[in-house]
Length: 143
Image 1: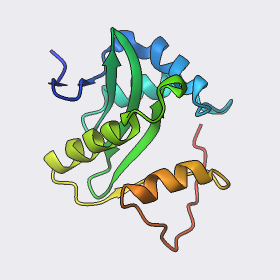
Image 2: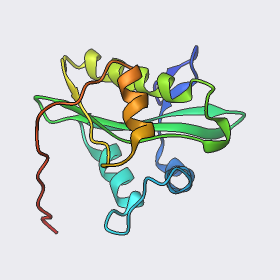
Image 3: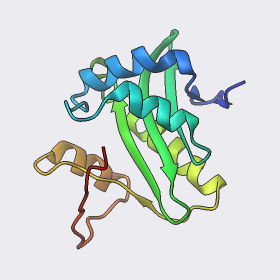
């Protein structure tokens, strides 16, 4: 049985939630051609140090956060709130759930990435207490 926080409606995603999540992520502009959301979702659910948290309203997924840790730091991806329901605290609630999930596992710092030029997201995270750090994110595709 997936974990459920009855007060906020947060629960862990189930395998069957993949299509609804992909649609939410697409609606929020989070998908990119080089990232397969179905593959990302399945990988997060399969790992012992990751999951996807969701908020449901009236049987429909309206917010999500992919959360995990690497044994040192936590991370979130695919943080989404249904565009038609923005301003109702869904983003704050799903981020609080992700932070709680990490804290329960002893993780003491959460890192996240925001694409350059996305001031709305930067402002949202700043309002939650996140700060920009003087780091450069580098990556290399292994596929």
